[in-house]
Amino acid sequence: MAYLAISGPSDATPADAADAEHVARWAAEHGHVVVCGGLGGVMSAAAAGAAAGGGTSVGLLPGPTRDGAAPELTVTIPTGLGEMRNALLVRAADVVVCIGGSWGTLSELALAVRTGVPVVALRTWVPARAPGRLLEVGSAAEVCEALASHLHR
Amino acid sequence: MAYLAISGPSDATPADAADAEHVARWAAEHGHVVVCGGLGGVMSAAAAGAAAGGGTSVGLLPGPTRDGAAPELTVTIPTGLGEMRNALLVRAADVVVCIGGSWGTLSELALAVRTGVPVVALRTWVPARAPGRLLEVGSAAEVCEALASHLHR
Amino acid sequence: MAYLAISGPSDATPADAADAEHVARWAAEHGHVVVCGGLGGVMSAAAAGAAAGGGTSVGLLPGPTRDGAAPELTVTIPTGLGEMRNALLVRAADVVVCIGGSWGTLSELALAVRTGVPVVALRTWVPARAPGRLLEVGSAAEVCEALASHLHR
Amino acid sequence: MAYLAISGPSDATPADAADAEHVARWAAEHGHVVVCGGLGGVMSAAAAGAAAGGGTSVGLLPGPTRDGAAPELTVTIPTGLGEMRNALLVRAADVVVCIGGSWGTLSELALAVRTGVPVVALRTWVPARAPGRLLEVGSAAEVCEALASHLHR
Image 1 (spheres, each protein chain N blue to C red):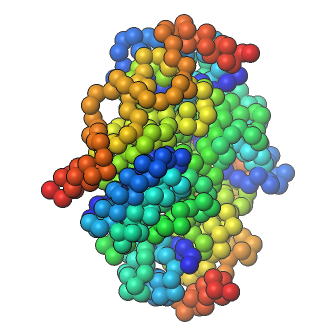
Image 2 (cartoon, rainbow over the protein chains, first blue to last red):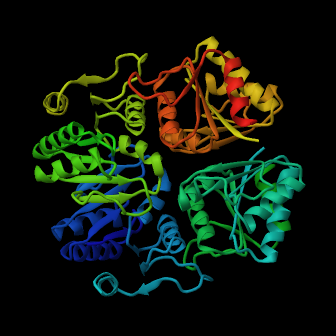
Image 3 (cartoon, each protein chain N blue to C red):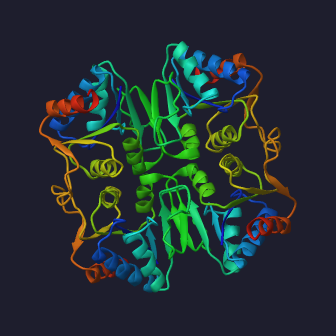
């Protein structure tokens, strides 16, 4: 069992949301815990996918209360840390999956690489000049294949 | 008086270090407080520049002790937050200057844009696909011009 | 459903551990989530009680890894915050139950009263000169009565 | 040079404020940095004392902005951590001086003893049943004597 962070924008595209749900459902079906930022967009899609897969999801909320938490979450933790909770999300994860591009998502990707947490990236922003430390894939199915290869070896 | 964060790699190039020192000295000479991550490379160069300019510098250290703090710093704060202190650095800043590329620097750039703190970027990693929310400049002198324009208007 | 923090020493007395388990089991049987510091003593007793009651428990660990986490926990979050995680525990709680005395437990009691989170106290340290803002009770059964009265009204 | 945290209530009594100013002035005159929570009462009195002694003071503010910061502070750090910043204050300190009683002050006292930071206590709340791990003194002059003995040996 592993902890899988799913990171992505609150103003997700339909494709981002569908892919986040796909990956979270796969993770739940394989016994993994899904961790996310607890709000809307990719985050609530991840919570919904975990629920659909019969698994557990945890939302680390930026505010000091549970207001705005995705209703499908199993557990919500209001951190009151603001965007500093992005670093907490990365710390709680064995693998970070970034789906879709936003500045918050980029901060989580960068913190993950910085602290040695593996990242699987799908349609997300990556630095133009950085060395290749990310696994970039092209579909939700490829995210799941990468996770299976990494987590189940 | 403003708080100016200078962000950059601990394994800075000589050009990165020289530019960080230049910018920090300018900031100190103009009455601003320099905030940085408190360790080596761009961080210690910023502390040295602030000291040379007769000003105040603050180091927000990742560890729980003052070990490894740049000796030129006026004030050191051991946070024990690990890389989560990157978010604290951004929060303490009126402007963030990124000099040189690293994953930690990128996390600070992303958190700054995410939370609405202006960023001036010199030879740093920027996301390939992100919209233009950064001011990218080509020299330490241009960083200072941008800061003067932003802070002294 | 509410989030119930159970706070107490890692070097718990047998009575502290038994009472923590009793309260956590009651909480789980009534549909509440048990949150604790994730380590031994009162913390692992709370996790065991939640498991015995068929419920969910969350451990907010002080370190950056899951080392030392109580095995009965449903979800573990390594915070890397050190004792700063005591404040996170309080923030995540709708009610804090303090069982047994220690400096860490006292910090959680004080932070809870400071931030307006109700506290039920059983054999814990309380300040000698503070005004009466705590509900002090004499047994685990009385803790559960107080919680029922507070949470189920 | 040492970092001396001065902790106490924002609704300080005149005696609390006068004693905090006395201790901070002594600390500044002896080359120490005064760290405090950055707001009013004992905190602003500590900042004023440090300024009167020609020294440096740092305010670790609970909010995400500098609003409400004591004007006498040399450096202000808006943490956005809420009461979690109490733990940051303790971490930044070589010694914690508690003057006056409040729940926030008690949380800092407890976190300091928990993490091995020496505490000097003047008219503050202490737990009724805790073992003797604090130095309780009766006047600001005795606080300074205790600090001199601890810091200058």
